[in-house]
Amino acid sequence: MGKKVSVLVVDDSHICRQLICEALGKDPDLEVVGTCANGKEALEAARELRPQVITMDVEMPVMDGLTAVEHIMAEVPTPILMLTADPRQQAPELTCRALELGALALQIKPAIDAGTEAWNLSREVKLLSSVRVIRHIHNSKQRRPPLPGMGGAVAPTPVVGMPYGVLAVASSTGGPQVLFRMLSELPADFPTPIVIVQHINAAFSESLAGWLANSSKLKVRLATDGEQLLPGNVLIAPPGLHMSVPFRGRVALRPGVERDGHMPSGTVLLESAAKAYGRRTLGLILTGMGEDGADGMLAIKQAGGLTLAQNEESCVVFGMPGASVARKAVDHLVHGDDIAGALVRLARGESLSTGR
Image (tube, rainbow, N blue to C red; front, side, top):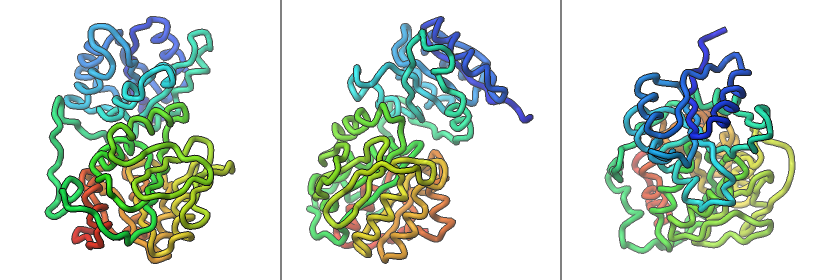
């Protein structure tokens, strides 16, 4: 057996800390190396213990979980799993703000009397332990400057024309942060309808859509079956259903079996978009574990469409983009900070000088 994954548990409730520790302790591959009752203690422990994963509560005294995430990701970047109350009882910004600050995943706390089995943390913690996290600049909006000629997302020049009929996006671990920036920078007149599959805990789908909508000039929402694809609209696949584009101008939502380990599946969405729109399909694959979306990217490329993938430098996990590259399904690799600018250039009918 290899070295155990070291975990730091942070929660102001002694009972919750105990339940989390017991749940993790049942997995022989995991080892709890410390516990903390507030964010200040967590920051100090992260510096000293250098755990491979941190489970973090949101609401705590002295220093709350969001502030702790901000400090930790600036000083000692560590994969963080946020454990929160039911997001339907909180503002979307509260839970999704953690993703913006650098946390990788969100999970709802079960009821205290539900027992250790209900926490179901081991698989998520082990997955996160393999992720290469990126340092986040503390208390700053500093970002990587755009590549020359790729800053058009914030330029006043209007977007004209519509060379692409649909932009289909597949995204997973680390993706919400990239989507947040992309959608916040795309102009209100961006002409191409956008459809997105983002892998996220089902309970947080509505919060995610609300958080992204609040940052964007576009209309962002969870999709409904039969909804129209319209310029200025962004449709996100709801949990537990595959979203597809059965024909031009509409989306469909259907139950089914998982594809590439997911439902909704990025591959299902991208393949259907390629079939419906052919060479007028624009595919985008963002950071994420596994290979979901790679076959869909290949379908778009084979149909004559254009494919973009987030580059390895800016990915939290290069799995999905990397699998697409391995299939020779990617036309251009783009830094996560430059995606909006690249999309605006394409919408204007310009070509991208940056590529593989």
